[in-house]
Image 1 (cartoon, helix red, strand yellow):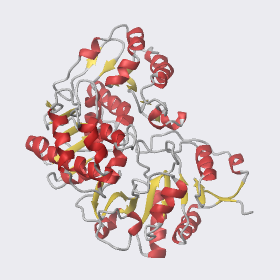
Image 2: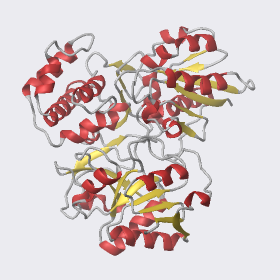
Image 3: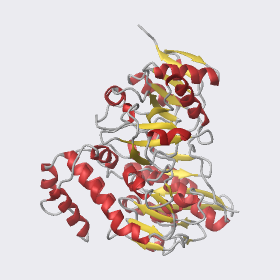
Image 4: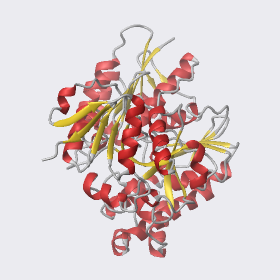
Amino acid sequence: MKNIFSIAVNIHDHNWYNGTIHRQEERYTRKKHNLDPANSHNPALSRQFFKDHFVTNFVKQTPQDLFCFTCSNLGQEFVYDLLQETTGETDFLNFRPNNLWDYYATESYYYIDHHQSHAAYAFLTSGFAESDILAIDGRGWQFNCIFVDKYGKITDLSDYMSIGGLWNRLAQDIGLGYLGAGKVMGLAGYGSYDRSVYKVIQEYLSNPNHKLPQDGKQIIESVPKENVAYTLQYATEELVDRFVLPLKTCDNLCIAGGVAYNGYVNEKFCKHYCQVHVPPAVGDEGQSLGTYMHADYTINGNIHIPSTYAGEAHPVNTKIFENFRYEELQDEVLYRSVAHEIAQGKTVGWYQSCSESGNRALGNRSILADPRDPLIKDKINHLIKKREDFRPFAPAVLEEYYQDYFETSQPSPYMSRIVPVRSGKIPGVTHVDRTARIQTVNTEQNARLYSLIQEFKKLTGIPMLVNTSFNCQEPIVETPLDAVKTFQNTNLDILVVNNYVVRKNID
């Protein structure tokens, strides 16, 4: 058996995984995507991550150690000289797989393509015996988009489905920033179809170099932002119909890559596949997970499934609460007390044990609130998260009740699908287009969050809470001290750190 260590060489979302801990570098540098906020293409942070983690872990300690990695387009360009110096060669960059389980290996390392990593992570976490797989993002290395059939055969869709890069490009053109695709998706619910934008998108897709037409930027800037967003969403779903669905080989589908954060597309697939699996860390922040799992499967014959909560467990020193009032409560008292506070309109920063993998807060690094409150979205966006007012929030709903409130056929444990809302009782989590990006919760997934929601249901009759990531214009909080700082600098009413309930002093 090989002892595996895996790392991702990306332009952004630098991360490593050792089989237990998934370290997402942005959580420690406190820079979103571990990028320079003034210049997203500044290579300094990529090079520092490479020196700290790739070089440090590359040298084998024993013959049983296996160093694994994958890379993206600009990721390898930023550190090409360091890659060459560390590995002794860069022949792996010419590796182009035909099957999901192909790989490139030397005596020193194990390498797979960027999109293989996405696909392996999605499939091996699904529990399916066989599945189609769609791996789609802005730019990997050999591919932009691949479809893997149930036999593992790779079909390259990059020439037809290079939509991920356009989401990032248009996000910047309409003022939502680099890697702002998620914001564009939230804005789409406010918009309507625009023929001129659709034409720009088609010309982009038909251009071999995937460039906007000469007048493209001018057209985009002349159209309301929400209409650009809606039309881009429309065109994306149209591409799925045209190029992906005809390749179907079985009734299961796994999806990964940055575009797999698109909840509208994921829900669309549920109408064509009996089971659709989208894992929690679907973007480049999960690259080290997929690479580790691929190697463990092909070399050791093992299906390794990482914990959803694979961050580090940080000790709590109560000295960080010294400027606040705090008390430690037993579990049952904690759940009742916090549920009561939320039902009374309080917003709660909820910090529990190890952090989630991925960009969705799934109950260990969450801001929680009352979904019945029609003003809660504005309160959290303006006073706590300090972000755009059109950004929606997710409901974390007890799994046994999700179909009472939402029109969908399958649970959504990782907040990966956007579905129609059936009930008028939950305006705080209902988007302008009458949809919600749901998280279904059961006791196996997150027993503490489940218990809290259950207490809230006893008080209100509503089996869900508003759940949004615990952050304010920064990456999701990682340590208890990060949580305290965010609590102190925002209008959050209460902070819960494990079993400690923390309140601000009243003057």
